[in-house]
Amino acid sequence: MATVAANKTVGGNNAFHNFNNDFAHIEDPNERRRLALAEIDKAPFGWYHIRAILVAGTGFFTDSYDIFVVSLLTIMLGISYKHDNKGALTTPQDTAIKLSTSAGTVIGQLGFGALADIVGRKKMYGLELILIIFATLAQALTGGGPGTSVVGLIIFWRVLMGIGIGGDYPLSSIITSEFATTKWRGAMMGAVFSMQGFGQLGGALVMLILVSGFKGSLSTAKDYASCTGDCQIAVDKMWRALVGMGIVPASIALYYRLTIPETPRYTFDVARDVEKANADVNQYVSGKKGEGHPDEIAAVTARQNGPPLEVPKASWKDFFSFYGKIRNGKILFGTAMSWLLLDVAFYGLGLNASTILTAINYGGGHTVHERLYNLAAGNAILVCAGAIPGYWLAVATLDFVGRKPLQLIGFTMLTILFIIWGFAYHKIPPHGQLAIYVLIQLFFNWGPNTTTFIVPGECFPTRYRSTSHGISAASGKIGSIIAQGAIAPLRTRGAKPGATGVGASPWLNHVMQIFSAFMFAGIFTTLLIPETKRRTLEDLANDWDMGGESITGAPINNKQAHGHGDNSSEDAAVTN
Image (tube, rainbow, N blue to C red; front, side, top):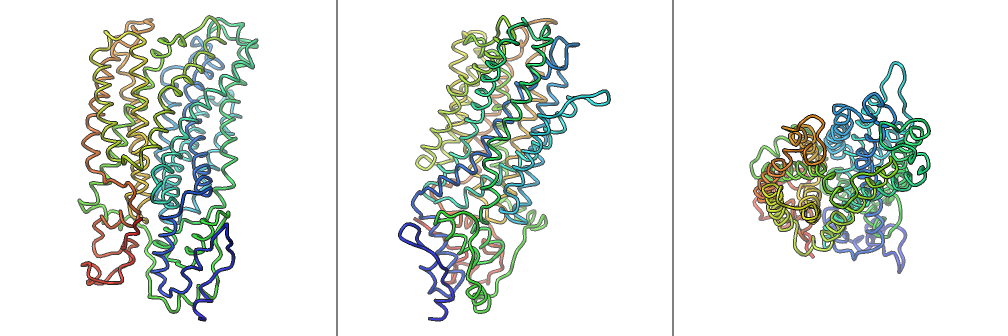
């Protein structure tokens, strides 16, 4: 009876059940671990799940907003600072600003991903948001001088902002995954990722508001080159306000990110603090904020009476040893290459946005006001037409159809659509191209754009999960750099000097054909990933070749290693 009393924690009522006390009579900490994780996996969908989605999703809203507004930012920087070039940045300047964010994102995905496995999710979560807020504010306040270039300063701050954005990818994915109920884990992670669509829409809406607010000043100039005086001042204020607004959603989410508990799975499987993890499970399921506080007597009793447990730490040596096994390495290769192949076309498709905007009469205007208004409104229309419906169709079907089928169907449909667009480009009227564009956006998001984010957050063992997701996400951003830095120049190949409209991009049809090849390759990399639908994270971890280790990394005896032990709760699947 003394042991039962020692294992109990205070709190709990009819509304917030104390799950920890249900298992206070169980002396084996490993069994308490298994039962506590079962409570997370089987918990009915509740408001605490919604809160987790909003906290993680607000970060993705910010990420997408900051990435999306760069196309508007470069236009307004040209108007403000490059009247020696007809109010437009030079091509190298434009490309450098756009690539700087992606370059920083790669660093952030790899760095934050590895650190979250080494020091813990909680210690890293929120730091990436602080970096985003700081770099965003610095961008909005920056300015050139006799010895500095405003373009160079913007590039510097966008690299730092990109590092923060990159950190948000693995952290938000794995934290949502490790806190999610098994039945709706796909929908929860998909809902977090879908906030990217609203981030794009938010950027367009803020731009519309700013353009409308400065209508009087912007209407005085017919084109970017003639936008001087009040018009130029208005544009300078607009780009600073547009960038600075990205701070608002990030600041709202910051408090909640800094006060989350460590994920119970990390505490169990890496830190190996069973009592602390039990308390965190209870705190989370009760819907309360912050960390759980275990009974100190219970913690001491568990350490004294429980079986000896090692504390494995993620390390590069151990990481390379694990993924050096073909069975393990092929899954990481599958998730990373699928993301890379996808992002080449996903980011490269922006090359054709001007053609689509022209098709729906949002490609130009008689004044600077009309041009900027049409640009913002047209982008808002395109996001609402294809991207946002695709995200939410994915949320609705991920836990029924499965991740792998959606990714296969998506890559297949995208291959077909890009082949049609590329080989029949000159025979398809503008409105037909608009229809193809919307369908491509639909299948991007109702397919590989969502699943490549979700699967790496599920299929890897706990102490490799964040690093592996970071590698997969960084591969995707490398794909976007390839699209913007290598494939983008191809569309203007053979263009005559001064050409406009379709004549300015004579090779665009071949670019679409290249994208179809990347989508076709994605079908085969998808075959390397596992199906994770409605399987617990512990069950998925048992599919790996652990080489004589448990899923936590602690050594196990030969009897357990061969699957004959009765006390194999470390590797037990918690099924629904």
